[in-house]
Image (tube, rainbow, N blue to C red; front, side, top):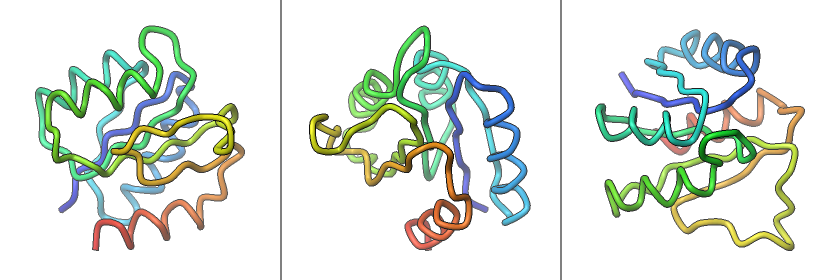
Length: 117
Protein backbone atom coordinates (compact mmCIF):
# COMPACT_ATOMS: atom_id res chain seq x y z
CA UNK A 1 0.00 0.00 0.00
CA UNK A 2 1.28 3.48 -0.90
CA UNK A 3 1.66 6.17 1.77
CA UNK A 4 0.52 9.73 1.12
CA UNK A 5 1.20 12.79 3.28
CA UNK A 6 -1.39 15.57 2.99
CA UNK A 7 -0.22 19.00 4.20
CA UNK A 8 -2.84 21.76 4.37
CA UNK A 9 -3.92 24.19 7.07
CA UNK A 10 -7.58 23.78 6.09
CA UNK A 11 -8.90 20.81 8.09
CA UNK A 12 -11.90 20.26 5.79
CA UNK A 13 -9.70 19.98 2.69
CA UNK A 14 -7.42 17.50 4.49
CA UNK A 15 -10.41 15.38 5.48
CA UNK A 16 -11.89 15.40 1.97
CA UNK A 17 -8.58 14.42 0.37
CA UNK A 18 -7.92 11.78 3.04
CA UNK A 19 -11.34 10.20 2.41
CA UNK A 20 -10.70 10.23 -1.34
CA UNK A 21 -7.23 8.65 -1.12
CA UNK A 22 -8.24 6.11 1.54
CA UNK A 23 -11.19 5.03 -0.63
CA UNK A 24 -8.60 4.28 -3.34
CA UNK A 25 -6.53 2.11 -0.99
CA UNK A 26 -3.83 4.57 0.07
CA UNK A 27 -2.56 5.06 3.62
CA UNK A 28 -2.88 8.73 4.57
CA UNK A 29 -1.15 10.94 7.12
CA UNK A 30 -2.09 14.59 7.68
CA UNK A 31 -0.11 17.66 8.75
CA UNK A 32 -1.46 21.21 9.04
CA UNK A 33 1.68 23.26 8.29
CA UNK A 34 4.84 22.98 6.24
CA UNK A 35 7.02 22.53 9.31
CA UNK A 36 4.72 19.84 10.73
CA UNK A 37 4.74 18.17 7.31
CA UNK A 38 8.56 18.17 7.20
CA UNK A 39 8.66 16.53 10.64
CA UNK A 40 6.19 13.85 9.48
CA UNK A 41 8.24 13.28 6.33
CA UNK A 42 11.42 12.90 8.36
CA UNK A 43 9.79 10.47 10.82
CA UNK A 44 8.00 8.21 8.30
CA UNK A 45 8.24 6.91 4.75
CA UNK A 46 5.98 8.42 2.07
CA UNK A 47 5.46 7.72 -1.61
CA UNK A 48 3.82 11.10 -2.29
CA UNK A 49 3.28 14.47 -0.62
CA UNK A 50 0.24 16.61 -1.47
CA UNK A 51 0.65 20.13 -0.08
CA UNK A 52 -1.01 23.51 -0.02
CA UNK A 53 1.33 26.43 -0.76
CA UNK A 54 0.19 29.20 1.60
CA UNK A 55 0.10 28.05 5.22
CA UNK A 56 1.19 29.49 8.53
CA UNK A 57 4.29 27.93 10.12
CA UNK A 58 6.00 26.88 6.92
CA UNK A 59 4.59 27.20 3.41
CA UNK A 60 4.66 24.61 0.64
CA UNK A 61 7.87 25.98 -0.87
CA UNK A 62 9.76 25.66 2.42
CA UNK A 63 8.30 22.16 2.81
CA UNK A 64 9.57 21.17 -0.66
CA UNK A 65 13.00 22.58 0.26
CA UNK A 66 13.07 20.72 3.60
CA UNK A 67 12.05 17.47 1.88
CA UNK A 68 14.90 17.86 -0.62
CA UNK A 69 17.31 18.23 2.30
CA UNK A 70 15.90 15.13 4.05
CA UNK A 71 15.79 13.01 0.86
CA UNK A 72 17.40 14.61 -2.23
CA UNK A 73 15.98 11.89 -4.50
CA UNK A 74 12.34 12.37 -3.44
CA UNK A 75 10.47 14.05 -6.29
CA UNK A 76 6.80 13.24 -5.80
CA UNK A 77 5.29 16.44 -4.41
CA UNK A 78 2.02 17.82 -5.73
CA UNK A 79 0.86 21.33 -4.84
CA UNK A 80 -2.85 22.03 -4.39
CA UNK A 81 -3.37 25.77 -4.09
CA UNK A 82 -5.43 28.78 -4.91
CA UNK A 83 -2.41 31.09 -4.99
CA UNK A 84 0.23 29.70 -7.35
CA UNK A 85 0.75 31.24 -10.76
CA UNK A 86 2.88 28.87 -12.85
CA UNK A 87 4.02 31.65 -15.17
CA UNK A 88 5.47 33.88 -12.46
CA UNK A 89 6.47 31.42 -9.74
CA UNK A 90 9.48 29.12 -9.94
CA UNK A 91 8.24 25.72 -8.87
CA UNK A 92 10.76 23.62 -6.89
CA UNK A 93 12.24 20.77 -8.94
CA UNK A 94 10.79 18.07 -6.63
CA UNK A 95 7.23 19.32 -7.31
CA UNK A 96 5.68 17.31 -10.13
CA UNK A 97 2.51 19.33 -10.68
CA UNK A 98 0.18 21.84 -9.14
CA UNK A 99 -3.59 21.87 -9.06
CA UNK A 100 -5.59 25.02 -8.49
CA UNK A 101 -8.29 25.18 -5.83
CA UNK A 102 -11.10 24.40 -6.02
CA UNK A 103 -9.61 21.04 -6.93
CA UNK A 104 -11.13 18.73 -9.49
CA UNK A 105 -10.66 15.58 -7.46
CA UNK A 106 -11.08 13.30 -10.48
CA UNK A 107 -8.08 14.99 -12.16
CA UNK A 108 -6.05 14.92 -8.94
CA UNK A 109 -6.64 11.23 -8.19
CA UNK A 110 -6.03 10.30 -11.83
CA UNK A 111 -2.66 12.07 -11.82
CA UNK A 112 -1.68 10.57 -8.46
CA UNK A 113 -2.65 7.01 -9.41
CA UNK A 114 -0.64 7.34 -12.62
CA UNK A 115 2.35 8.85 -10.78
CA UNK A 116 2.40 6.06 -8.19
CA UNK A 117 1.69 3.18 -10.60
